[in-house]
Length: 292
Image 1 (cartoon, one colour):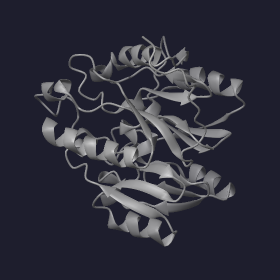
Image 2 (tube, one colour; image 1 turned 180 degrees about the vertical axis):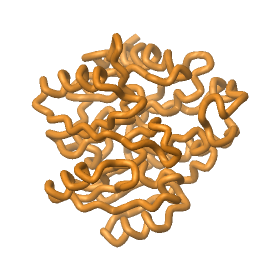
Image 3 (cartoon, rainbow, N blue to C red; image 1 turned 30 degrees about the vertical axis):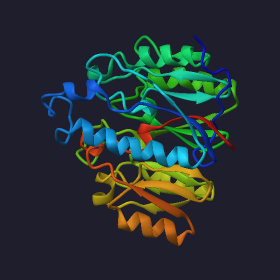
Image 4 (cartoon, rainbow, N blue to C red; image 1 turned 90 degrees about the vertical axis):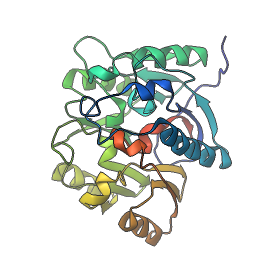
């Protein structure tokens, strides 16, 4: 049964967030026995991760954001809480990626099923040799997206989604990612680059090329350089709830102070359990509607 037939609309990272899709860590989260197999930084407690996730949802709902839920995930898909990695909304529909990591195969199907339940058209599903994890896509402005090319997103995946973007007159800027702080090449762009205002971004300079930083500067976008310790604490992975108001992981004093100096209202959230999985706040929220 269709629960919702309002077309999604997203063309920015920094407008007022109106509706989102999330997934609370459920039973599938507890199926991980060996964190090394999943390239996690420890074994998080499911109850603790669910509590952290619940605090995020409460913050969003308290600010008037409509929250839709994935409801359930496939058996063993322990990283299903990172819904943003799987797809993105654009002008009335959803583009579903193709997960490269074997532990995440199957998340695409559940995302597609939920989109149908919510009455959201699926414009494209990355297929064949294409690999595309949507955590590698960050809006720069309403006509431009940055897409990180790394182990989790390949040339064919970018080619497929570029075709969709071109349909809507949106330019794609490719950003080769040099790897995470451990140089695995697994990092998503959203973990090392994020827009927090139309003319302000967070950048972890060790992971993205200088020419991309120059591109930002040429567009009049200032950058706050995130130190290594705070990038590892996922400081770059933030969520703008509305212009001038941003959610960041707690324990990042440099980034917090830098944002406050820019006149922004900063709300800190504890994600110490969730962070063990390698993800950040931004990955927990798939925006369905955001004002331009």
